[in-house]
Image 1 (cartoon, helix red, strand yellow):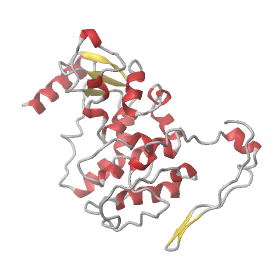
Image 2: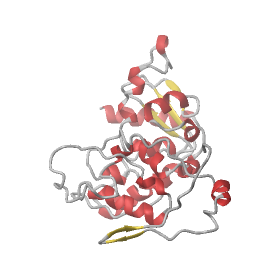
Image 3: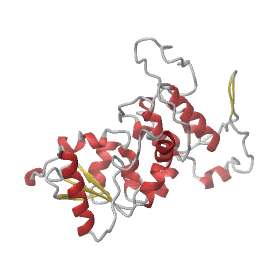
Image 4: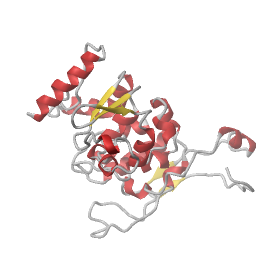
Length: 274
């Protein structure tokens, strides 16, 4: 079976690299156990971050010597692995990531392939060349943009697959639909004063706007797709915050009530680009 072949070949890679142990998320999580599933999803990013290496098998990318690593290779840019929600943390969290073609020959690693991976995923090269700690230095809007084109089998998992990316935890409630993404954003503003979470673009998705029980006039986005064009939003450097008095004059925290969201934000005049 293909699954068995994948396990056998992965074990061979690990053995040849000098490792005694290898872990497969698909095989070692009991999804029928709710507490184990909650722990796995909420702490998956941390687990991957402790990994010395992550092996990525691209079953839909073939080893073509003539176009081996060209930036315009459609099969690489459109590989399903780069479009799945759950694989974003697999890409960013481990110390090293090694990619393999469909024939299990080595394609390269995250660093050597950073240009084509960046083109395929929208993740800036700086975050592909560094370890996972740097991921949390990206603005909330930029991290959301990395999820904008990704998909999951269950709509709730678009929120749950991003928990480690934003370093937050939420209860798992399957069946709530897009409310899961709403709860994710609530947790993010509790833990962060990054205003870029509100830098998204509304797009009418058609159908019944209230079918999921959400108010689409909300300041919160209904899905990561709303952040597709938000890559360019960066956090203001600390030295500029100090120069403009933002650090010294600490702002009030976000307050979410049944009447809406209350917040105090700086209004700054800039005569030059950041």
